[in-house]
Image (tube, rainbow, N blue to C red; front, side):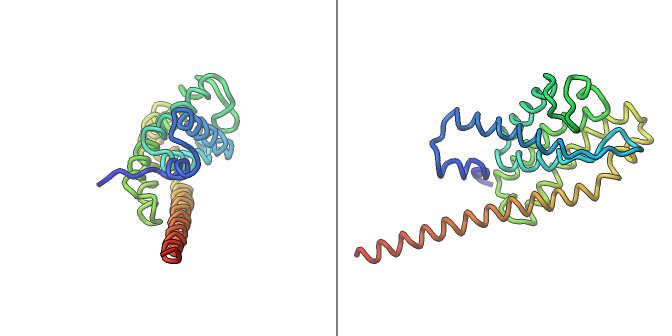
Length: 208
């Protein structure tokens, strides 16, 4: 399947030239989106893993920037948080967060963004149903890393109950929200491009 430009690049190319500076700006912007969504945090009394908007940020950043830029943006976010910026859930930061119970979820965001970006480059994000499939796959990657790491802290017998089952309803909602947002934006771009093409054809016809 032929690779396609991810959403942010498709929009960028309509307004600015392709430059390293433009790419860098998108990567930094993606890390700030991650930092913002991580602040939507709700601690739970029975697990060290909070409910956050972080995975929604991963899905949006990966799909919008594509595989390499998306993963790079998440990696930059982790470096910013590890350096002490209050970018992790609930305004936390520092290396102890990465080494703690939720560290696996954070590390898993990098391959998750890459997988989602790869699927977006194959056009999965352009229709709602395929977008939800892509985003659910990305969520699964985060949980794979997160639950495996969490087991070191709560025990393997409690890892799924503490790190997966309570979060599945929210996972479905996030995948649906991201799917709706991306597919709707692509639909708007198709309508916009179609309208411009139609106007161009009318202009050619009137001038002939």
